Image (tube, rainbow, N blue to C red; front, side, top):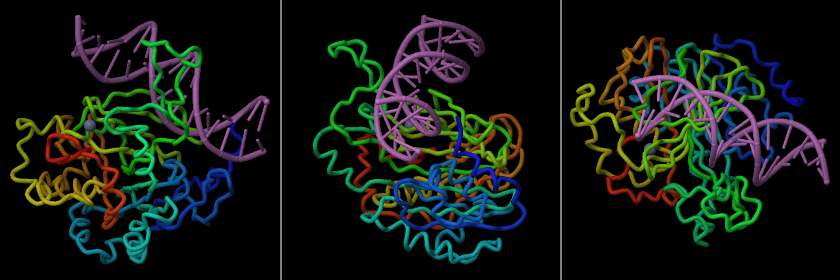
Amino acid sequence: MERKDHQHNLYQQQHLDYPSMALFSDEIPTSLAGGGGGPFDLPFDQKGFMDLLGFQDHYHFAAPSPSSSLFDLLGQLQPPPPAPLQMEVPSSLWQNQPGTAVPSPVPADSSEVVNNPATPNSSSVSCSSNDRDRAADKAMGDDEDEDGEGRRGGEGGRDEEEEEEDKTKKQLKPKKKNQKRQRQPRFAFMTKSEVDHLDDGYRWRKYGQKAVKNSPHPRSYYRCTTAGCGVKKRVERSSDDPSIVVTTYEGQHTHPSPVMQRGSIGIMPATSTSYGSATHSSALLSLPTSQNHFHSYMYRSSPSPSLIGNVSPNASFSSAFPSLHQDGRFETSFPPSLLTDHGLLQDMVPLPAPFPKEPKEE
DNA sequence: CGCATTTGACCCGCGC
DNA sequence: GCGCGGGTCAAATGCG
Ligand SMILES: [Zn+2]
């Protein structure tokens, strides 16, 4: 069954010892590296991760933050080309991302950067923005709202209640023409965690699980249970390091996180000050989900200390950060600059929600 | 009883 | 044209 998979296994060893990061900024053709043979010369593990995520269309960012966790990053985050992180990370990488990879709406639809955290306590985040012509497509009226809930065409919208069709009512119905849907911003978090269920403050319903080719670990598919919210989440463990969990989020929540109502923890003084009503018009909505959230989260919940250690079962803040359910430790970090994308992203974000948008999301 | 998870079936795009 | 791999749906099941 798996014939081309072995290739990747090669690099699968260990690596968490040296700070080796790989950065990819370029538009990948179409046949991503999976089968081709590697358009780039990735070092090794990086590739492994990418593979997992399917870096084809997204940007991956990894922030090496040893013990300082987000806080530190944040500090650096502010400035564009942040200084070299605490690690020996080549800052040049970072520069590239923001400057090159992100802002290019038109060119290829894929550019991504991957930084691999070589250290045990670091995680990486990746973002992806795909198409640019999506607007055109939408214009046709084909899928008016794919975010909201219309998921048809590409995924599967089988209709049983109305069998007007005749036979192919199996799973998908080629609604319109082609137009692959699925061009939503998605960003992936690489979190080092032993537990699989990280509570990010949102309620998810698992709708599928599949075995991953090169991995002994399966990949789980989740969807936000909130009505009208089509956010999806994909969780899988790295084949290289079982301790690393890669969570890929797709889409944006159109509602505030269920938790955080007050009463959960008591954190959230005045958190959304700036990002709340401000202008998250561009960066915020786009993939920046991460960024925004990060900021807010960090500032408000200040999980730093807790982030990297054991967290109580109910210690899940209402933030987007992963917290553990049971016990175990996880660490997550964010890239300093990655979400600064604006332009096409705005387009993608509909935000019909009554709220001021999504103050936070997973 | 309602809801979340489990799990097999199925679809689709793509590479060969 | 077929097979593979990724992704989703839906029925069944389990749990609170
Ligand atoms: Zn949601």
